[in-house]
Length: 83
Picture 1 (cartoon, one colour):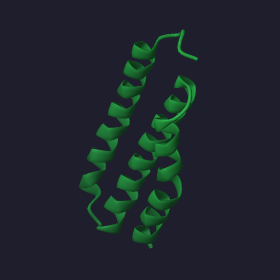
Picture 2 (spheres, one colour; picture 1 turned 135 degrees about the vertical axis):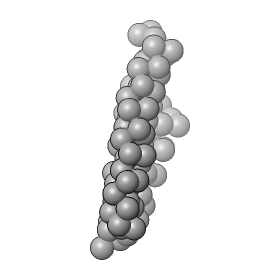
Picture 3 (cartoon, one colour; picture 1 turned 180 degrees about the vertical axis):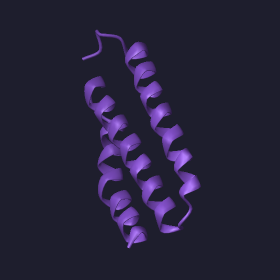
Picture 4 (cartoon, helix red, strand yellow; picture 1 turned 30 degrees about the horizontal axis):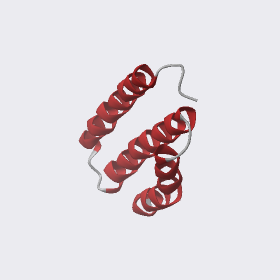
């Protein structure tokens, strides 16, 4: 069940997030980057539950922290004038 959930999550939500990250204005790219980070964290959680290894949840926790830091770096580097 968890394997199907992770495949559905990756197949359904990852392509739109990647598309948003690659195209458009900076605000849309930021939303896409956040979406990809969130989907990756949720996929890692469901995969760790699918293989019954809860110790892999630390990887999802670290990725969540890195995604937040990546958002801060992205907003700092793009600045306020990029529309």
